[in-house]
Image (cartoon, rainbow, N blue to C red):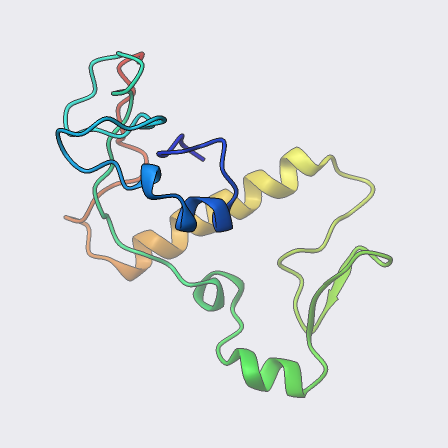
Length: 131
């Protein structure tokens, strides 16, 4: 994840600390790195724009999570390393986690690409300028 304002706080602290509001033009203890036009300074290292979204249901193929659970579906069991009625989060002791995570990332890209038209943002076209 990217550093946001008050990155040393947990979620509860973040919501309850008025210094984490960071109103424009006022001092902020931990402003984070998000800004409109990143320049590499300590408080301006990244920006983001909405590109679309893919739900976990779309990604894993679980069309109706409530029904999935009613039928005994389990996304992942830490003792068996497998799900029940789904295989998306399964681990396989024969392959390193790297390959499984790479497959999941590729599945996300494929699902996103198939959900949106070709003129929409291409996840392979992002640019990192070194900041």
